[in-house]
Length: 176
Image (cartoon, rainbow, N blue to C red; front, side):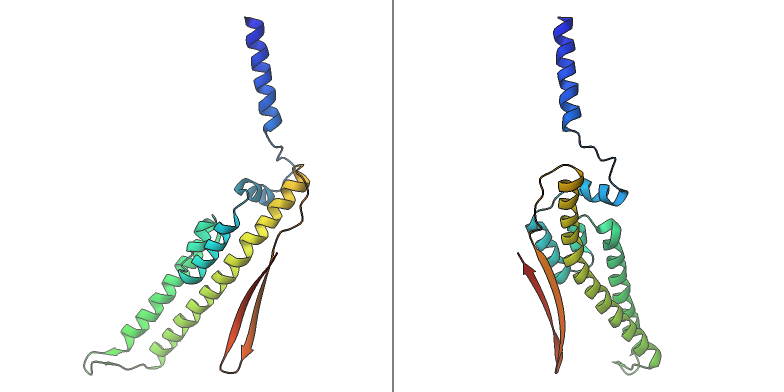
């Protein structure tokens, strides 16, 4: 009975040691990407659209990047909206019951508008590039350093901004 128990324990220990991946040769950044694992394309695309339409770092929260950059986007967008609201409050003249923008309230509003446009533009760019690049890195790590089967990258994103008379055009393309 002792022998059978010892043999079962040995086999169990062997199976655990064979299934555990040796991550000692990975850098801290590679280990973080490897531990995050592969995400389905639907989750990445959903996060991209959440970043476009909702903002406030929601797309980054969907792909587990809220602690890295998403909270900065949330704080920045809220602060930008606060600046816009503060400038409107500074400009309101209760005696005339209308808005009278002077240099300080106009400057504050301009800074708030520029800031929210900047945060949203960065958020849209980052949510459509960073997670996809990390997925490519994950596949490279898994296939080269962790002994998996090599695969070619499955997709490539392009981002293009073109000025036009009376505005501009922003274009995204997915090549697969």
